Length: 383
Ligand SMILES: Cc1cc2nc3c(=O)[nH]c(=O)nc-3n(C[C@H](O)[C@H](O)[C@H](O)COP(=O)(O)OP(=O)(O)OC[C@H]3O[C@@H](n4cnc5c(N)ncnc54)[C@H](O)[C@@H]3O)c2cc1C
Image (cartoon, rainbow, N blue to C red):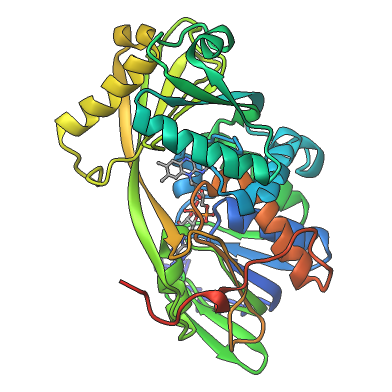
């Protein structure tokens, strides 16, 4: 009737949104760790919600250098890095065709000074003891492997098992696999708090609560804050690293290069851009121009053809690291049903493996490789 009088009919009361049904597991944080654990839990038959405050892999994972070498890993993590590298190289097989353009190539770690050479000898020895195929070679031999290299290399460590991926493709690569496996993906859905109760967990988000029997914290640089939701203190530090990308150059590199000091890693992507992953303590949000120039100078010193390159883009990325630089990978102490994953440097390379291992444990299976439970960490950070 009211419509015939030209008065709009009163709008029907908005139906209250039915509460979202409970999930077997809710994973908070959709970087490589969260995506991998969510996917493997779904493969194991669980009904999984994956929540992120931004897009899939929009944190460190999508912005990092994507290097897959085992050389950057501490010896105890070598088996994980190897397994992770293998998973990236064959991602299409376990992630429904998704891939990150991963390629395998040799890796060279370079020493330009006597001090660097000592560092390199020490790390190569530890890596060899842990089973990594790392060999010390002369600068001349390094130039045969990497013809673009400067002739100023004093000593190099060669590892045939390195590689790199296009990290910015990671979210896209996981998306279809997650959806096909039935994972409910909630992007732009920040979680602000978690309530623990007898039935499991209730996650507070701006657009409604999410209920789940199990909880996985996978917040990358925010992992410490997330552990705090459950009253657990995770001793973790956050540091900033910086990626620099040049314009497209003709092919000049066929290896992944690292400095013995670990200050810089360098690779050239298939599209010709060179990517420099740098870590100087002062490289925070606003590095001084001089610090950036220093990183570029060191890269161009290693590969002289880079002197002709133009720096196109640079961005900072935050990275979280537990106080012993080993992963937080296991149950949250004192909180049944809650699990934690992350807090390890070079976590991109081994991320798919860590996610799979945590899912295996949560599914009641024996993980392929041991976890790293966080009750090993000191209750308070040691200064
Ligand atoms: C500059 C740089 C270069 C690197 N290069 C390499 C490399 O070459 N090789 C390598 O192996 N590793 C590399 N790393 C390390 C690697 O990036 C990380 O170890 C890895 O990506 C961590 O994955 P993650 O899933 O734990 O964290 P992230 O990818 O950061 O994912 C965490 C997610 O949690 C989400 N989140 C946070 N708070 C909330 C909240 N309240 N609610 C919902 N979601 C939330 C974030 O939005 C984010 O998407 C690099 C790191 C940096 C900083």
